[in-house]
Image (tube, rainbow, N blue to C red):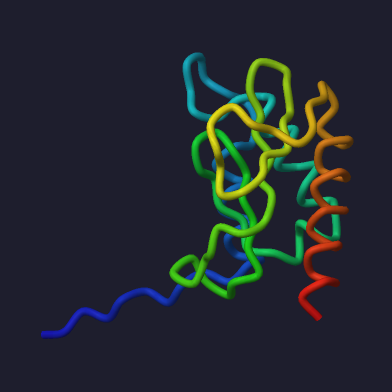
Length: 124
């Protein structure tokens, strides 16, 4: 008997799964932190981020214009959240390099969204 593979999640479905995984309350020493929740919920409210396919990698939110996780290419900036800092990272990630550092997740998301919009415009 053949078992069918589940269909890849859509962008909206993936956002919902990630938000559910990181939604408070957060257990001590959990992968889900308050900083990551603030980043994710802020990014979801941003139209540019919400329109892209989200993934979490190395404590960072990465997004892609792919339609499923199997088609993702690491080409757009990512945003990391740790220890009260939000960093916009050039992607693919290169060590300790970052493009923007702030304690405000909204500033980080807006900065990254502007970079993403600029890159999308230049591709057209």
